[in-house]
Image 1 (cartoon, rainbow, N blue to C red):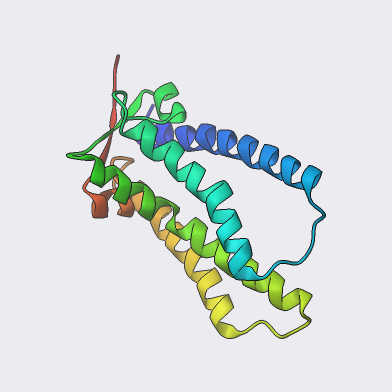
Image 2: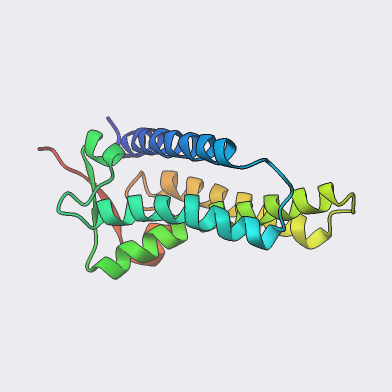
Length: 164
């Protein structure tokens, strides 16, 4: 199986784990609070500390472990090559940056929509920027045949297949 296919399948497995966590988090939030409009900065902070940071830590801690792999990567027999844990921190910061930028855009879109105000151009720009960056990451995965994405290149990391 080509490395790029293994890497995509590992992503799907890890993303399913993240979705299960997000669904449980949403369930708890809906049980203890009444859904209501929230200022985008407050929503951003809440989302960052309850969703983005735990997801970042999931990837960072598992990729810096002895196996150098998340659960999805372990199942697909992949691991990350790196020189020091700072590389893994940079890799995951860059990897989840489009996600956090997109959250910012969504929070501001919801705020302006609830306020019945026109959504400013800057909100649309950051929202599209997140999608463009994610697309660049995706394209870079194929250009390097699965060994590196743009965020791997910038962080000095590399994906490898473990035959054992």
